[in-house]
Length: 287
Image (tube, rainbow, N blue to C red; front, top):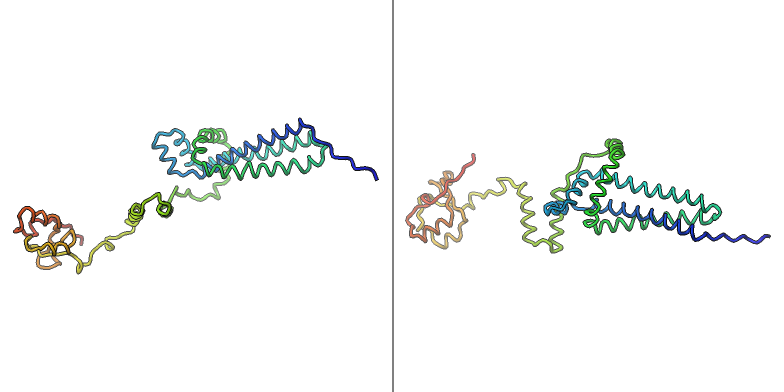
């Protein structure tokens, strides 16, 4: 049996050529992946805050977020051009220069390109893009907007092809999402407990009806309109509500509302002989 011919070593100049080519492809792929995820995860609230401060990049970024489908389409097109075109270029170079290095040509180069693009061109850049989305998104906004202008025709074609499967544009946020953010802010300490309660109560106002906030007549603070200020003792005032209903003969004939502070003012000014009717405010009756 003849001796096995050893695999030829790849010349150093070819190694450098492939390292540079693969490196450029991976770097470009990483940039597009990182920018895509940074813009995708960038909160609209932060962009709006920067717009209020006059940040010009924020205005560009907001335009990109408002047409997010077009923005992502432009980035994905460029990312695929780099990944697919780069892989094709590597294949052409392999056939051209590594034909005689069968093991390297068939196994090492393809496997190396796949691993590098997945790890350093896709996964890690997306993590970086999400982690530093604010810095990356603002800096890349103008470049991505420029891409959208250049790729306007391909984007319109893609938009036409996908319009049959797209749903109506969803709102940027919802009441449930805001409440969840408030709860998370309260748990993390970013929002005080009373602030969280105030925000939650604001949303509840929408669901509150007049019936929900009405006080039953048996629990109302009420007095006859002819009652004099001097007839109300300090102890009795302490047990009354801040607004006191006055009526003529019975609660079916309400004539006004007296504020407890007005009673105290009358006491302080020595006008205890005034009746509640004389210091009352008109009440609005709904039938």
